[in-house]
Length: 237
Ligand code: CA
Image (cartoon, rainbow, N blue to C red):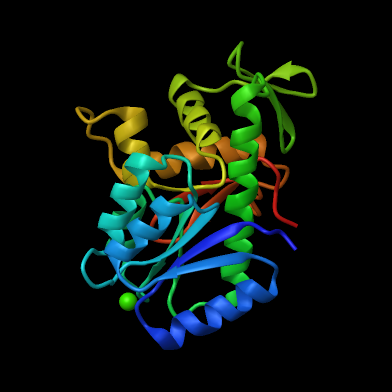
């Protein structure tokens, strides 16, 4: 029983009802909204711990809600519900500030796992806001010291390029969230550089080779098909 407050925004009653029943049975407090304007109003009354947000909504789309909510509640985890096969929706959703997405039709257990992961991440962020962040992290076969920007394996330095380091640091800062390739390109390489998304894949591949215990079965640098990557500090069991 978590007692966390979930805001579920979905305009289709036949989808909303089972969602509400499921999460209440799992011990969450649940608020609902059936259009974009109501979503912002409800979120404004009592800030939710996590938002499940449909993309196609009356009055304001999920993308607009996401952007506006981010302006006032920058840290609230947002999981988007996107239409099957619409990669454009997913990227747009993630660009607008969503942390993760689940494709419709979704499995409630999968959605719940995503919500739990986001709640864990939000708690870690909140806990580290007051304390000094962990500057030394254990990562697969390696250790990474953020202050020294030093990656080691069994105490010996591992060679990484400046770009690989920047990719690693960006993913560490966005741990648990889906990071689109386009975001990595813009944030790590910069808007005025024009490498291809293949460049991003190559760098992540190289990081896997150095860091993952089994690079062929990555547990830290996960691929999100058609979108980009999700980086996990602690692998999901
Ligand atoms: Ca809808």
